[in-house]
Image (cartoon, rainbow, N blue to C red; front, side, top):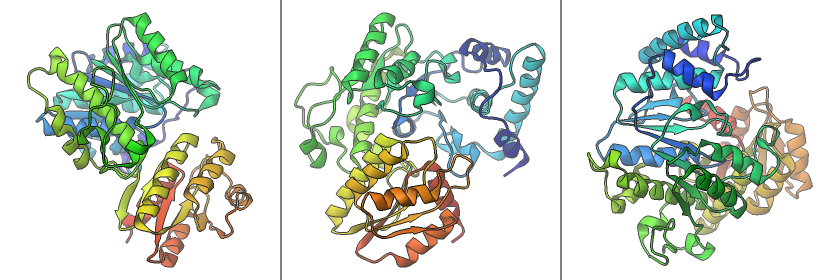
Length: 438
């Protein structure tokens, strides 16, 4: 890493004194208000935020617009969090933005504010870089939650809420309703909201918030299971699309995982709403029927990502994310007539019992290779090993590092097997680094 990247990586994730959303707004304005007047799409949710941002980014690019995309976490380089036209910001621009935000941060601290946390620092950098690059539209992903998130200081043209499930419960709440309330906190007065309606409990919270803020709501209904598994589409996305419409653009059957298809349908409904907004009537955005092509052109690393034939990486890490990955893996194995093999790790703040139970019951791996992560949040590999055995996996192997587990799994993989590296984005990162050494 460069000196600037090392500096940002060393900024604590949590600070003793937390900046409020109002503090973040003040900090941005003291930087010159780089986000003001910008066209912003604000995306929150438990799973699928990054995918929706990726699909929309590609659609904007295919429409001839310049994009700035802010996402997290990164996989290999911290610069992956700030994308200009879908490319990580270069080292020189990154270093320049670090200097500007650091200087303002020290000044802000001297005047009684808190020096930015790691996420806040990167957010300020992104807004500066997007303004300097003259992007036409910003795709802005929240960090943790939404209501109290630094990104909630923005004023977007559209809010998007992806699927909501149980994750970060110590911070966001121990029920779907409480978590949904935190996520829905990004809905602004009069700003339309597109949301995934897979959970009626979450939908009730979102619709209540939308009514309170006078925001038009566009729900994306789940596809029936038989439609999601076939090459046909079922009910159109959102209330503004005719029910029963059959259209390849709405099934995204070319995507290998059901969760990817659901995320693409959320992105498509967002695109429909965006095309009707005055801010995007000129220049015209690509038509709805072209959106599926943009989705096909999108590469989102580490999300059911086939890096080589029959070798997949997936960063799903919470209970629902692992369930979605395991279901997709099972479907892939059945369609190709092959058996699943798993390399896995996890972080300690997840419900490991539920994660392992879903992975085993749905994916049914014939072998499991386990290692700790090179991260202080790593779950104990021995505990994971025990859980996999208790859930019925007979062949469980333990390794000191993810690199060694991956190497062994590759060496032992047969032609009638599909290898999955899954369970944590940190694991995907370590595997990608190992792959880069080949």
